[in-house]
Amino acid sequence: MTTTAHTTYEVAVAAEATLGEGPTWDAATGRLLWIDILGSRVHTYDPATGRRTARTTDQHVGAVKPRANGGLVLNLRDGVALLDPDDTFRWLHREPVPGRRANDAAVAPDGSLWAGTMRYDEAVGGGTLSRVGADGAVTTLLPDVTVSNGTGWSPDGRLVYYVDTPTRRVDVFDHDGGLPRNRRPLVTIEEGAGFPDGLTVDADGCVWVALWDGGAVRRYTPTGELDRVVTLPAPRTTACAFGGAGLTDLYVTTARVGLAAPRATDGALLVVPGVGRGVAQPAFAG
Image (cartoon, rainbow, N blue to C red; front, side, top):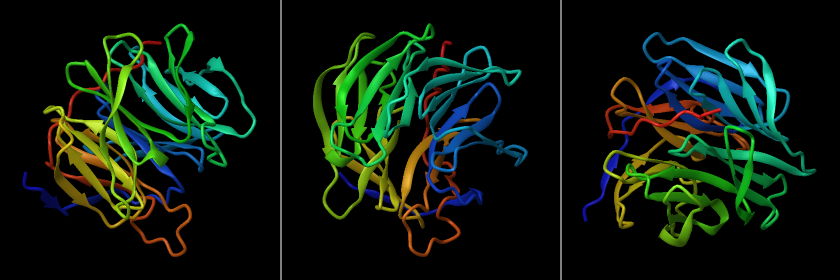
């Protein structure tokens, strides 16, 4: 299969995020949500008007997602919380663990939140992937994760893709609405190309994965073949999501943490216009 290279991009938000992550298109508001984990900030961006907002959280935030009835669900250092439309904050599930923080999260087809955690020191097996229901009930899906990262479902919901970054793999599970099963590798990122981080799945069922220390987003087919590479001027690309009115623009978050001489694009929210076609994502049911 021929691999297509793509390098056209725009700076959507010239932020200086320490660890930009988790872009999510909120169809109800026409905004992109994203976060700065270590900066403890939740950002929004409206591409139609250019309007941006930033909200500081009381602790490190690993992910933010829209809720079906308005407001946001937050994957925070000490657990999962809800922010109501009137800005009322309340914990849905609070479970502080010393030395551990929240990381990436995704909303499943049933409206539950699959929330990841990791140790600050990135100790092997120190993190988890858990399912958090609208009622706050928690089921541990993967108990021995190191850096829980990208999670996404195939368009028909029968497959779920997942990244534990140090494994260098994008794994795939069978999923019938219950627990994920039959884990196997979809692809292993080769040495020198970076580490897999956040991901999204497009309307063709292909997986787009951002490469930390790779300065790129790659698209893999459902059989694991590489068929597209988007090269970006930020080595620490962290996650990606489709947004815009037609879900054709790929938004990519980046980080500047650990870089000796960060550039203007490091920590910015980038966008690659018209590069594919995404799938509308469900909102959290709680």
